[in-house]
Image (cartoon, rainbow, N blue to C red; front, side, top):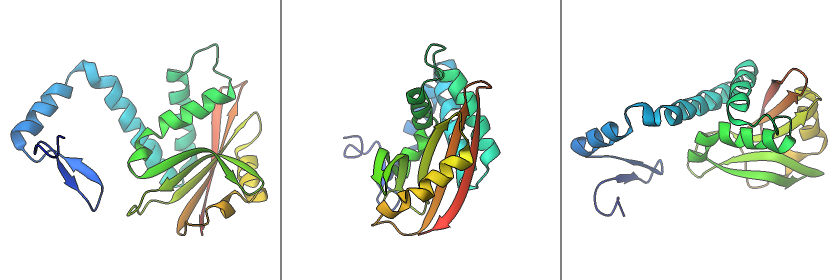
Length: 184
């Protein structure tokens, strides 16, 4: 409706919207300024940092950002719960929804990939297959992706692909990450 009324413009090539009117853009900026939106803005910037680190293969930064997000957003009662880790990943990669379709428990090969991010049409981003582990190893998560042929189920996809293994250590409350790039 906002596009139809002219408040927003839609760019078909990038599937994005923008505020074309300078005056309306200024009012929008005024509405989100201040402390009311500070936490949301910080979380969105954190999500952008995480995506960039993942695309660059910066495993240490990915683990560090996940540590922060997990600590800030999980109850002490469910902190070590595997489902909490999955929710932390979904929250952390929130900005991925601009370029990706997220599929949890993606049926593939000989099992289910925990989370798969498939690029939307006209996106140049790599697909991502994410496997989560608790008290194991991030390298073991990568081996599981390979051993169970999770990538084979991405029949329609060809291009750059990231295999992302994430492990959470319940004792140390630390995340580790391994990222491998491949071509499909």
